[in-house]
Image (cartoon, rainbow, N blue to C red; front, side, top):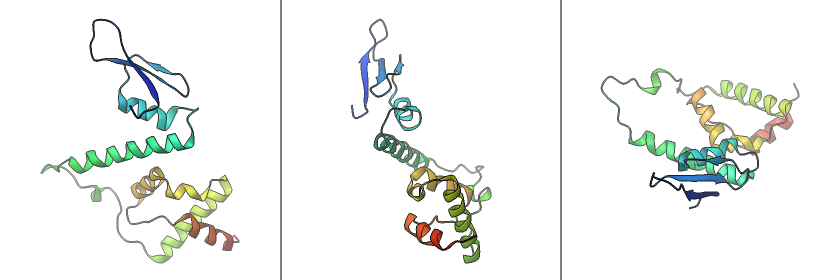
Length: 148
């Protein structure tokens, strides 16, 4: 198994059930389902390295993308555009959003690298599908010129 968890069969009457425990924090599960174990490594394990957390966050996001691509719209189902603003934004609006983003990152001590994280990109797209977050390099260049 590629997951960094120990998985072993449960002894007893029930067949094809597995117990599991995390190699990093030693949490155990009576029933070790792969998706639950991946969620643990991506969100809850405090001892997993940043590389492991990122790896399993990406796996979860990829799986979510595959599921949504397979779903078909039924005739009565609403479109996402009915609920989310996905129109193109004016340059002045993008500049104001970027400036607010820089102020937030700097005042809270958050690394500009976060703008490249899949969960952050997903969050921004949920807020407004028409906004493309800037690169971390662009944020760093612009951040040095903001004197407000």
